[in-house]
Length: 215
Image 1: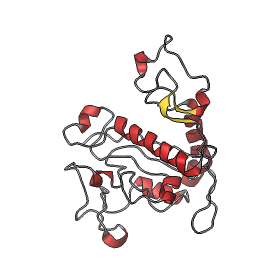
Image 2: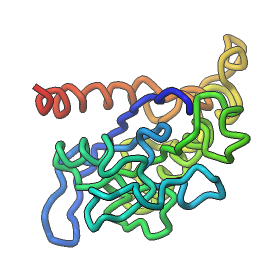
Image 3: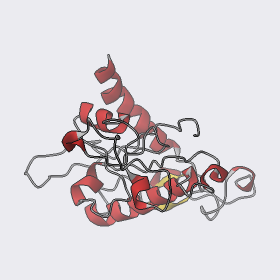
């Protein structure tokens, strides 16, 4: 089992109205990336032997359901989403039954058995960090279509600002590589890593919402 990956929060400045007619607050979407300590069920939907959709997992989960969480109950993404008043559970992105409200309020990309190095995911056929970021790009594209260009907080969500934005990472992103004109409109700076604007949103959210809740 790999070491726990980064518990990464990404929040969007979206103000929407749900089916009950109540307004979601700003910064209402929270996303998670990681491994089995954060996976809320993505592995259930991929051909891997690393699953926990069977007893005794989930014995304290609502309805005593084994949902693919490697725990007897809830995980940190669920508890944190609930504590911040966003929603009760952190839904796996691979669940084909994801609702529009789930998409608006954030999803979970974590995959049990994955790691920062793609090699760790080859044998167990799990989802490495690079693939989780690809799913994140897909999520952003779907979200932009759902809420519109103005409410989606970025103009370019599928590629990085450096070069083509598809392969340039580390040494491939250098002084000879052309950059986009407006980095702040990009979610990613290079092909993998978020831009400073994204990190600022994450930091602001943690300072305003997470830290007060933990004190």
